[in-house]
Amino acid sequence: MSDTFRAFTAGTNTPDGSYGHQVVDMSIDDLPDDGVLIEVEYSGVNYKDGLACSEGGRVATIDPLVPGVDVAGTVVEAAEGFAAGDRVLAHGFDIGTGRHGAYAGFARVPTNTVVALPEGIDARQAMLIGTAGYTSALSVIALEAHGATPDGGPVLVTGATGGVGSIAVSMLAGKGYEVVASTGKADQADWLRGIGAADTIGRDETSPEKVRPLDRERWQGVVDCVGGNTLAYALSTTRYDGCVAASGLTGGPGLSTTVMPFILRGVTLAGIDSVSNPIEKRRATWSRIATDLRPAALDDVEHQVVGLDGVSDAVATILAGGMVGRTLVRP
Image (cartoon, rainbow, N blue to C red):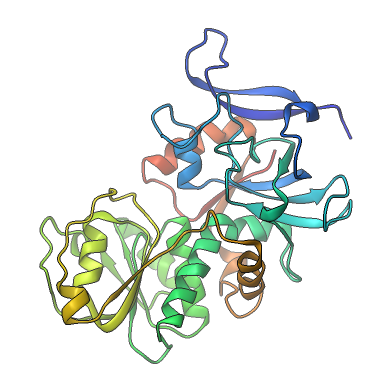
């Protein structure tokens, strides 16, 4: 194992002390001294990574920071419950926000974030799924826990060309659901159908300037990756006793709605957090991702792979809403 490795950093460690990004040489001693040491094979680019790389993102709590909130690779040194050579993945808690993350040759992450790679999923596939796909799985599980079934009617997925949305479309389609995908990218309609969507609708329909307190009942459930007016629309159009699983805020953190969907239709708003889940829930969810929730088009997920020198452009793209599918980082 080399004493030094390359790492992408965000912060004020630039030559003139201003905020910026740069690739630097680091050593193992620069990493946190607790947890599991992993040689990084792949990471991914998530919206949270974009925020962690932004001076005003309000996510990073250390400066400089090695971003990268999810990681797949090989355990380097034996640690509690893991042997050297074990193939693992990790994500969540303060990885890539409050401690150095995965945009580097090595990462040391908390033990309670590490999951053995499930059988049938390699490191690249794990990061095609990544934090985004884990969030998708939690969203699908929430809908199912509330009674959603493949023959129960259409399920809406908003922000469907993004990481969470596109994998949710594929997971739901793989289980036989009728998926309606909402996107602002009309040119991606054929791609969305290719990964399992039965139909697509435009962002102008799901993100109106003014949302009615109650609108026509349409969906047995919704996976909302957007927030803002899109979430308000989802609540107002979900059928009686349906469920909306909300995980995103690219449409803004505010929510302008009324109590009517909740007290007149019994709609449930299920908040989806993928950061602080206990390890037992992580292992159980990844076991389902490898089996019955495995994305139907996992090997066909549109993606690109960048090195550390390509991270700046990748995070700028996701913050601007221009990313389709997944971008992987291979240090």
